Image 1 (cartoon, rainbow over the protein chains, first blue to last red):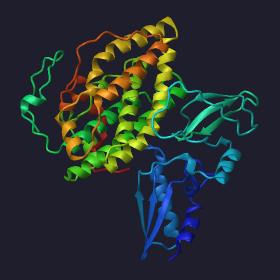
Image 2 (cartoon, rainbow over the protein chains, first blue to last red):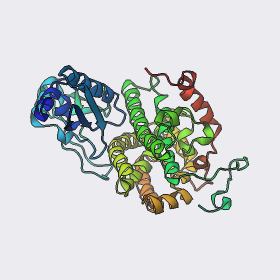
Image 3 (cartoon, one colour):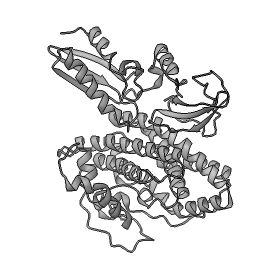
Length: 162
Length: 274
């Protein structure tokens, strides 16, 4: 049986199916790994409630651990604490930026906020300009928004802060 | 639980006889079905825009919002099924209940109408939903509090989106203003049902410690809605009779048609997986 650290190393090789440049561990969805005899329980937290990639991640985690000789893999979903993009570390953020996705800013505090609050422009991941505009709150996946850079004229995705 | 008299509301708009009603077996299950059904039905309505959005970004936005709402519904219905203990999961509850067994409010089952109607409805419901989740995230039922805290984050995005559209449409062209105002006027009579408080609310407050102050939520809701409507240059509709009944399974004719579509594949192939 692999150690807990070795299992985390294996999971580090499992990419996010929609943002393959970072792993499910870097995304922060893997909350815990518990080894009990020959069985491994992986606890995951869903990113977005309706994210269709969750089942894919679950299957990929199972496949990766099966391939390393762990036959019994139990994946459990936990809702609390709710997933936040603050769990994405600095290295993974840099990977996102290099991939062309603006990394998430700081998540808003829990609870209610003013509807009319001002929003900071998101820096362009390509040229770094802050002269950008929001194109759409909702991008190709639930976790992304679409912006356009006025400086280099390129559209880009933003990993939304949640 | 109170007698039959306690649950009969005045029905100013519907000429239907109150059906004989089975006693509520488990108020907590009933309460979760209300929360789940609101989101499932509204999520399905939003999904009907997929491929029909006025612009590509909006098509994607509405599909994303639909996914979130259906995701919230799935969590809520899953929990309802577990607590009910009769072997029904979220799919069984979504696809194998008939209209009279649905507990959603009437507002969410109304046909989408035009884009303004969809967005104004979304705005009115999102505002309510965000306030409700905020309250429920602090309730003492751990599983519901977890679902609420998670859903609140996503619904805040939805509300930002729908409120900006309401302002844009209201304060837009003559045409968009007229359509947004017509939508608001039509939807206003369905608002009251969102804040109804009945014996189910009393029971879950007592047993499951899910106490939500609907009057306080309504007051906050009105402040937020009035603020956005003012920015949208829309006129607050006059008080009207409230249309209600959804919480007791008394729906408009639209729900049955919607469910026929929504449930057709699951009912044609029960037990199928893909």
